[in-house]
Image (cartoon, rainbow, N blue to C red; front, side, top):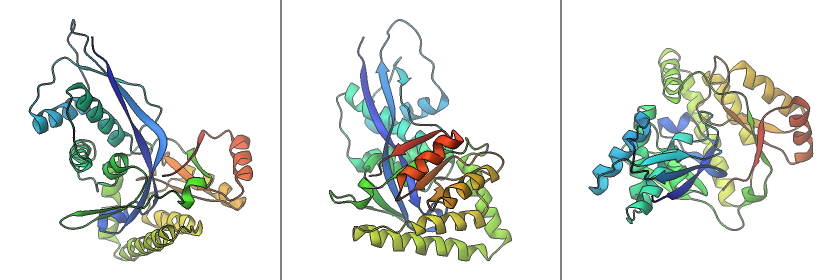
Amino acid sequence: MMNTSAQSKGKVIISGEHSVVYGMPALVGGIKLFREVVLRNPNKRKISHSAFIDNVFSIFENKFGVSIDNLEIMDLGKLPVGSGLGSSAAFAHAIFLTLLKYFNLSATKEQLYEMVQESEKFSHGNPSGVDATAVVYGGLVEFIKGDKKVTINQLSKEEDILKDSHFYLIDSGRPVESTKEMVEHVSNNLKNNIELEEVIEKMGKVTSDLITLVKENSFDELAIKENQRLLEKLGVVGEKAKRIIEQIEEIGAVAKITGAGGIKDGSGMILAYAKDYGKISSLIKKNKWKSYQVKIG
């Protein structure tokens, strides 16, 4: 029996979710919460997998001309699923990495991006590519989806200001809606209310300005607050998440959903930032919110 393993970081969108679908930039960063997989070859029994894993295997087989027969995937990761942290992309990435080890093959980041993005289409229909970019390239990334190509600019450097910043992920509850459904929700809202195009443009401007600051090793937390207000105008933030964010803002911190959102119940993970991390830590404990303190980049 041969076992191989690999892991992949999750991601947060610091600014630009939804507007990224319409050609605006997104600022995205890797986080140290992982999807980790172990690949086993039990030999003695027939293995059945989810349709997602079967699709990942098929993508790999078509890419490298190998046959994946009776291999078992065990998911050992701690990355929350369905909460805006790129869990499906990270899962596919980790599986591809362990298959590369198993078959003694190699792939460039560009090839891995293409394979992960193909797997994302199975889950999300027509994904922007931001999740695939984040999990494959890691660090801090500027992502732009153009009409004919994507632009990926890695921004991470040793003196990156975000590496020593105090970010928290607070769970507002897993959304009832899928990412695909939320993207379609925004698309329908735009068709019915042309004024929302200005909201998309403003979100792009907020994100672009923040990326410029980060390149200069600076950070403006008010961009997070503004991004949240624009996401609310797009109609992707549920009442549960809004109430949590209101409490965070009352102590002088800022917060926003990070991901496609959700409106019927939870909106996924909330990304919170505070200069005085003691205050937000106390608020989290007081409310008994499920949370993670994370480093971005």
